Length: 72
Image 1 (cartoon, rainbow, N blue to C red):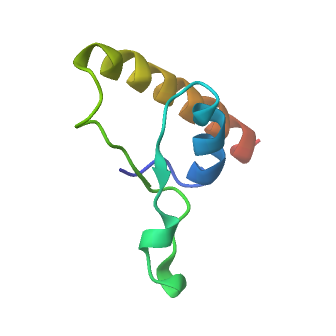
Image 2 (cartoon, one colour):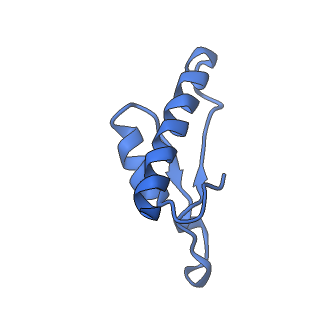
């Protein structure tokens, strides 16, 4: 998945981990010369269906402050 430009998904992942929501920053999956900080992986196949929507809401909330902080 791709977050807005300027969002560091490693930082977002750290904040979400505290809320039991796990995303995987995408930077390690790019070649060093093309590394992007605003991509992430989102797993959902082993998550109970009733936890997916609340987790996505937490992800959306976490992405908003990150964008505001970076662009400010």
